[in-house]
Image 1 (cartoon, rainbow over the protein chains, first blue to last red):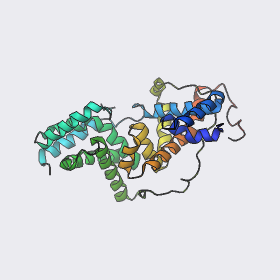
Image 2 (cartoon, helix red, strand yellow):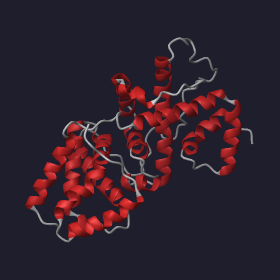
Image 3 (cartoon, one colour):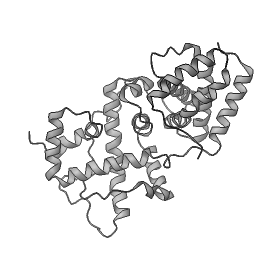
Image 4 (cartoon, chains in turn orange, green):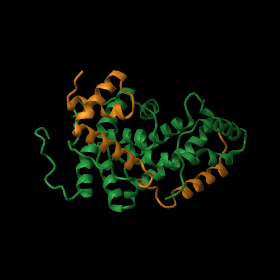
Length: 82
Length: 219
């Protein structure tokens, strides 16, 4: 089936997650072969996911881990498990 | 940046069951080890809901204490990580309610615009931005801002699915929505991010190609 760009866009997230049915995947790949816009949309979306998921993008506050374990240590020192 | 691990690994699940049994058996200090791989997940999940660092950290701490106190109620029918993230989601939502800073999403709430189609920014010739570029503070801040500006329900799903790599079923369970809603919201979150970020990122990495945007008739 010949897909239009908007049909590919509607499936991009599922395509990235490899959760589209195989026949749809093949249609999308045929479309991507000749459509530089959809290829760029797909590549940019993937790239943005990789960049935002990188641990450097969202850093934890300085001292967060230490404070978390200090709080837990206080809890462990004062209470019994129910 | 503090040390934090990932949330996946089949072998770890077996070890966790053993750890949990030992903690319940009295070796309570092992709880520190049990939660160590999830520190980042706890914070990011809370942050995606309460949207400020201080509250997110407090929620993470409260969730850890709560998880410890209720550990005996963990039955192992879901993964420990899913159980833990459900606790931090609840802590964060409670905090929001108390602060009355925002309305809580009802579970399967349809917000205005949720039925709309979301289209990406059309562009051609994407040149990949390598992860090394994240050394630039400006890029990190741009990405943070774009995620922060997502509507709450989309940001929460995006955080669990893409930042923490939880699967659809785990995300649905943690947020109390069905799996289809997770898929739809994730798709929209990704499209919104692509739309807000791709033109900017492309422009900032290829300034010589001005006038490139918006040439498509349907853009």
